[in-house]
Image 1 (cartoon, helix red, strand yellow):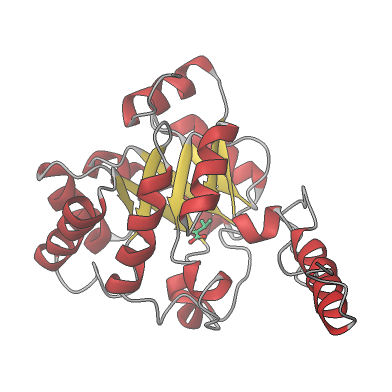
Image 2 (cartoon, rainbow, N blue to C red):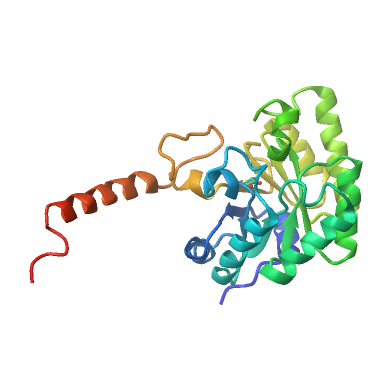
Length: 264
Ligand code: KIV
């Protein structure tokens, strides 16, 4: 069996200049495939909401929904680090509530690390509370989808000198609070490079260019589950949506024409 990935392995990968691969995942069969493919981090993102549960955004996703899916993913992952997103309002109300909810993920679903969005003082305080209780935490800066209404849409962040400076100092504050890695979403590649060089922990980019220590992509974007949903920051490695649609149409047709299950 290949070496189990831990937060220590990830830090060592950054030091060796080896890229870290993260893919979102929401169910058992996909988890088995991603683990076998060699992903370093299998990540139950709150993008569960828009990719699997049919919500418009990630905001409605609940703790119970996340735990239900994290448990299924847990059963399919043996080598990769199992990371889960803390959903909207599961960690922003108080550090104590954040700890109770992170504890649920670890006790009920066996996850190995949690991710929280944001980097202002309150987020750093929460990270510090979780880390001091033994919960590994990943930070998330740039476009933070749980704040979509505050940000005025899904747009590139850190474009002005002032916001770039603030993001860099938030990244350092998250490191001081104890994060083991930071997601950088939808920021200029030059800023991602600056942050990556300034922090000792791995940065994992999405729409942040090639200079991060790793990349994260959403399962359904990588494998083309939604044929008409195309993002500049993702690349399709398969057309699974179209394949399923064609196969389902064939099955419908064969049953209607009495071709399936065939004659005795
Ligand atoms: O939930 C999610 O999919 C994310 C992205 C950064 C991949 O947080």
